Image (cartoon, rainbow, N blue to C red; front, side):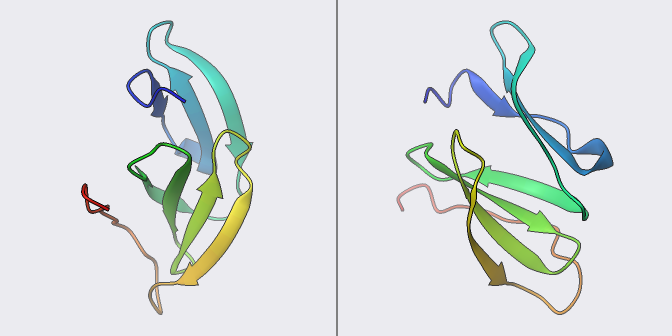
Length: 87
């Protein structure tokens, strides 16, 4: 995956859309049944993390968008996440 050209787009209505920024066209979509807040890719681009209104951080594989792990991050909504650029 080329993380320079694929971008996690808007999560309005709790739908994650991955865009090809060269064409500004959606290439993947996934609807969630709960609030989705911030998204961050790992350094290799094969995983990404999303924060939720349930207080969890979900680890998803890319491009399948399959949830691999759910981490309890907070007792209330989790809004922010940052990935260490050196791993």
